[in-house]
Length: 410
Image 1 (cartoon, rainbow, N blue to C red):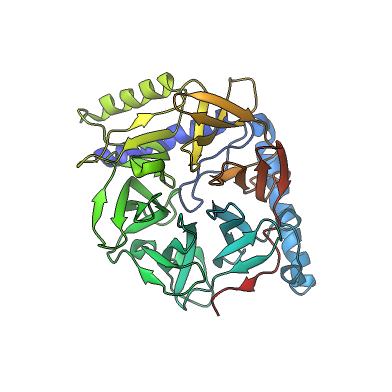
Image 2: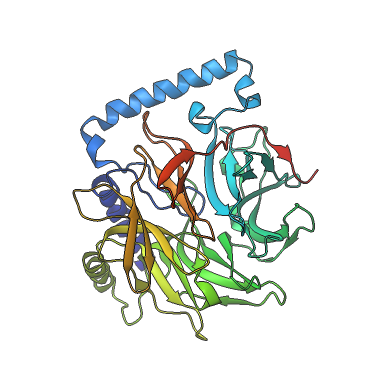
C-alpha cells in the first residue's frame, strides 16, 4: 500500500513539475520514452486548441503518406520532414565519429541504427524474428555493443503492447552484429545498459513492471552491474526510483551519474509522510535537480547524492572520457535551458540551445567535442529528430537520421 501511495504522489508531483517547470521542453527519459509530453509552461493557455490542431495535422499527413504509396519511407529525407519516425537512446562510438540510436516507425517497429557523422552513411541491425533490439551502447574499445533485447508477440501487426518487457534481457554482440549473446537470463524489466570504462562490466536499470496503460513502464528502479566474463551481478543503488535513465560511469569506474526521480526508499526513513517531506526538502535544496551520483566501490549499494543544485532542474547527464559531466539546466527561472559542462568541483561552462526542442535523451562524445539531443514533438511546432552541438564551435545542426540505411548483419 505504501508503494502505491508513493507512486501516486510521485505522478502528481511530476504532472505539476511538467506543467510549470521547463519552458523549452526538457523532459527526462525513462529508458524507452515513457515520460509525459506536457512540458511547456508558455503554451498552457492554448494547450487543448494546439493539441487538436496537431492531431488534425498528423491525420492529414498519414492520409498523404498513404496516397503517395508509402514513398516517404524510400527517400533520404531529414527527420524534420516526416513525423513517421521517432528516435531514442543516442550513444557515440569511442572515436566520436559514429552515433548509434533507436529509430521507430509509426507502426511500432524499432531498430538500432548507426550514423557515420562525417559521411552521413546509415546502417542498421536486424534482430532475429521475434525480438526487438534497442538502447545500444558502444564499448570503450568500439569492438562490442551492449543493448536490450525484448521478445514480442505478433497478432496481425507489431504494436507496442505486444512487447514482452517482463522478459527484457541485456545482450551483447560484436560491433558488426555477429556473436550475439545474452548477458542476463532472468525475467523482469531491464533497460538502459552502459559499459564501464574498463569494458569489463555493464550497468543497467532494473525495476518492477507496471500495469499496461501506465504512464511509465516500470517503477522502483535501481542500477545493477553485471560482469561480462563471470556473469556475476550486484546491485549498485537501493533507492527504488520512480524513474531512472541510463547510468553513466565516471572514469576508473568508481561512481555512477544518472538521471533519476522520486526515490521511494531512503535510509532511515520508513514513514510515507516523512519520505514525502524529505523529497520536498531535497527538491528545494537542490533546485529540482534529477542528477544523482553514486559511489559503486563499496560492497553495498551506495547512498545517492544530488548534484548541481546551484542551477535549476538539472537533468539528462552524460559523461565524457575525462569525467566531465554534461547536462541540461536553467541558470535561473527567467532564462532558457542551456547545455552545461561541469568539472569537479562544480565549475560550469554553458552553451545555448535550439528552439522548440522536446528533449527525450542526450549523449556526449567521449572526446567532449559533440553533444546530441533527441527531440520528440508534443506540439505542431516542436522539432523531431536528433540534433548535434559542436561544443568547440558552438553551432547546432540536425543529423540526417531518417534516411535509407544499409543492413549491417545480413
